[in-house]
Every structure is written in C-alpha cells, then in structure tokens.
Length: 479
Ligand SMILES: Nc1ncnc2c1ncn2[C@@H]1O[C@H](COP(=O)(O)OP(=O)(O)OP(=O)(O)O)[C@@H](O)[C@H]1O
Ligand SMILES: [Mg+2]
Image (cartoon, rainbow, N blue to C red; front, side):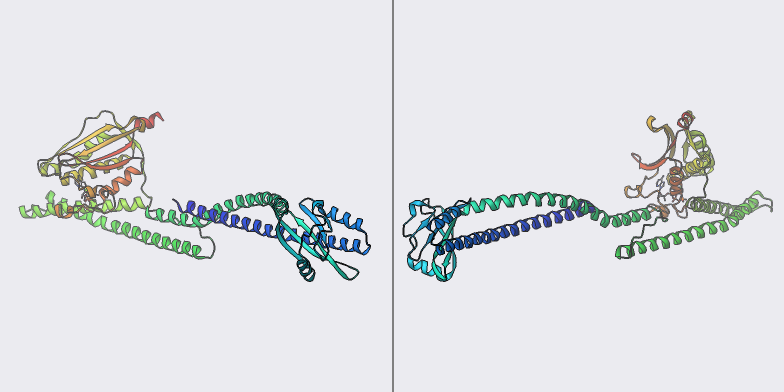
C-alpha cells in the first residue's frame, strides 16, 4: 500500500475514533445531566406539594388537602400522592383503596420527619412494579404534622429521558457526520502534505539516477523536510558540476589528442609510401604497426569526442532517407581489409528498398561499430551476416541485424552492454588493446536520439545478434 493511502487511512481512522469517542462521552454526560435534572425537578415538586399540604393543615381545610393530593397525583409518570400523619395511616391518599390503611410504621414516620426528606425505592402495593418514592416532612404552624409522599414511575422517567436523549443523539449525529466529512477531507489533505515532499524527493532521486542532473526539487519551509530538500539540491548541484567538468576535460583532452594522432598516422603513411626513401622489410613492418595503432587511437578519440558532444547536446542530426542495405555495404567495405586479414566473410543483403529516416552519418557509424565488434569477436573462418527487415507495420520502422559466429555474449552482460565504458568480463584479455567500451553506448545514444531502439541477443548454436530499429522513411514520406 502506498504511503499516502496508509497515512490517509491512519489520519481518517484517528478522526473517526476521536469523533466516535467524543460523541459517546457527550451522550453519557447528557444522560447524567438528565437524571440529575429529573431528580431536582421531582424534589421541587415534592417540596411544593409538602408546602401545599402544610398550608391546608394550617387552614384546617380537609377539602384543600384532598384537592392537593389528587392534583399532585394526576401528572404523567406520577403513580400516587399521599399525606401520612405521625401514626403512618394514609389519611389522604390518591388511591381510595388505601385511604385509612396503616402503610408506614409510626417509627419510620418519626425517622423520616427527623431526617426532613428521603427517597426510597419500593414496589407498587398493587402491581408490584418498582416505584421511586420521595418523602418530605410537612410542617404547619411550627409543628411537624406528618410526611407528604409522591410515588414516581421509574419506567416513565426513563422513557422520557430516552426521548430527550434520542433527540440529542440526532443532533449530535448530524454534527458528528459533518465533522467526520471535514476530518476525512483533512486527513487526505494532511496525508498529501506529508507525502508530497517524500514523493518529490523520490522523483528527484529517480531523475538523478536516470542521468537528469539538472533536476531540482522544490524547497518548502525551514523545517527538517525543507533541510532535506536543500541538501538534495546541493548534492545535485555538485554532481552536475562534477559531470560538467568531466565532460569539459574529456572534450578538451580528445581535441588535444586528435591532431598528434592524425600526424602519426599521416607520417607513417608517408613512410610507407616510400617518399622518404625505401624501407627495410623490418622498418616497413614497424611503420605498418605504427599506422594501425594510430588509426585505432584515432577511432577511440573520435568515439570519446562524439560521446562528449552527445552528452553536451552538441551533436546535430540531419535526417534523410537512408537505404539500410547500402549503408551496411559501405560499412562492410570500409572493414574489408581487416576482414580479409582475419579470414572472416561479411555478407550484406541486396537493396530491397528498405530505408530509414535518420542521419546518414549516424547510421554509418552504428553499422561500423556493430560490424567492427562482430569482426573483433568472430574467429578466423567465421561469417558475419547483415540482415535488413521491415519492422512491424503498425510501428512503421525498419530493422537491421548484425549476426556473427563469435562466442556470443554472457547472459549477465546482455543488459549492460550499452552502458558507457562497459566491456564484458574477459573481453580485454581476448582482444587486448582493442576498444574502450564506448562503441555500443554511442550507438545506443545515436539510435535512441532518432526514435529507434537497439538490443542484443545470442544466437544458437553460437554467436551474437545485435539489432537496431529506426523510423521507416516510407512512413515519414506518408506523414
Ligand atoms: N559481437 C559481439 N560478440 C561478443 N561480445 C560483444 C559483441 N559486441 C559487443 N560485445 C561485448 O560488448 C562490449 C561493449 O562493446 P563496445 O562496442 O561498446 O565496446 P568495445 O568494442 O569493447 O570498445 P569500442 O567499441 O569502444 O572500441 C565489448 O567489450 C564486448 O564485451
Ligand atoms: Mg566496439
């Protein structure tokens, strides 16, 4: 799972947990508050009822007392109301069947009067349902005259509380949902903020790894992430500078080396032509060796110079229609003396009108590199075959393949063949002094810069096949 998804889940989950917990706590606190409020209200009712009873006793109005008791029992949730003198007999009771009954023992009435007020849970005398009974002493004209009692139905009180709670729950739910939606959005945004810098950093690292040394990442803020971005950019800057000085060095060195190498080749040519006088056979052999080495050195320097130019973006391409079979034949011709010397034959295909749309010099250079390699690795008596094919119709490309009968390429080397200065293990020992590992790298860059591909594979039973593709000239013309 990606870091951004993980963080979104974590932040979102945290928000849901916090919101759920706070909603549950709010409901619990609300329930406690309602219980307290109910009790206070009931105590207030009881105290008014007891005062009313006291007032009726003071006025010696039995009818008033009865009216008080009856009206106090009629409220919803109220099960009974009654007045009990010190002997505990229900003198006045909202339930007529209990009037005159000795319900509370006199000792309990005395205790209740001494206490002032009390609350007792008791079952209903008729139904046995639980009741919450609140009692308070009644005083009239400074004397304690008995206790007033109100019986409440706890189930009714609970139902009333639940209705109030469910209303609150609806309100809290609506607010929580809105808060939840906001927190989820916030969670996504936070995850985006946290991962943005990490993603920029990894994009930057990928860009550097793929050779784009000019890539810089945005620096945000002065915190640790900002420091990291600054350090990264400073590192990229240093890398870019190092790369630039390396390229400058390479290009100036190759320039400096080119003319003396050309002179060596030129003078050895002159020596061999006999202009400076006849040469002894030994001298001629040595002059030949000088000439060959100078040529090889010249080719190597040219490769280096081309790489430097390519990497500096100074190599220019002039695309034109290039008949691939002709280009292969020209390259083979230039290598013919060497091929003859090695006893290796080079077969090129007849021209069947397959042309690439590319820079002719680049195509010639790629063929020369591929044929040069094939020649270098093919043993005496071997054969090199060049093939030119039409690529897939849909891709509009032409393909060329150089197949040799050399030792082939080790599997682990296949993927690295086209990287700079790479030579497969053992190459230097087999072909000492021959090559720098730049030919295929240069070929790849030349081909890719013109919209093509280049790859290597092994041939059964032995040998290597180096192929490249380029846009077909026919397709270009059609476009
Ligand atoms: N036809 C081939 N058969 C076997 N190995 C090959 C073949 N072509 C290339 N290679 C391997 O790939 C390596 C890289 O080739 P590349 O042309 O880049 O360098 P090079 O020929 O060694 O030197 P340069 O081309 O710079 O003179 C070679 O050193 C060799 O190990
Ligand atoms: Mg080569």
